[in-house]
Length: 150
Image (cartoon, rainbow, N blue to C red; front, side, top):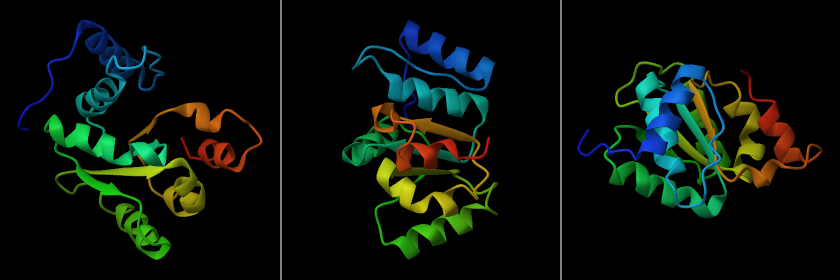
């Protein structure tokens, strides 16, 4: 890894807490580094196969942050055709040991469309950003997120 981030004290504490608990909710103020904190928690815990679900407008911002800090994930942005996305999910089911490990970036609506394929993958970690997208318990997108196997 080329330049791993030097975490601020609150990020260090948040990352360590998530690692110790195995899961967590980051509720820092906007602009205080939730993205890096979540990525560091995945890296430190050895989580290899990571799914990141974000509003579609943030896909490339997440990619930029991952690249900027030198994380060694193989980044796949799920913005292609449905058949191409399904093939990526199918390939991931048997590739737990590839290096660098894969990180899938997808939008909430795209995930809803791909939920059947995506939910067949044994994810090591799932990151949800801007969860206002799933605040309605009866919405199809919320139901697709809640159906992710744990």
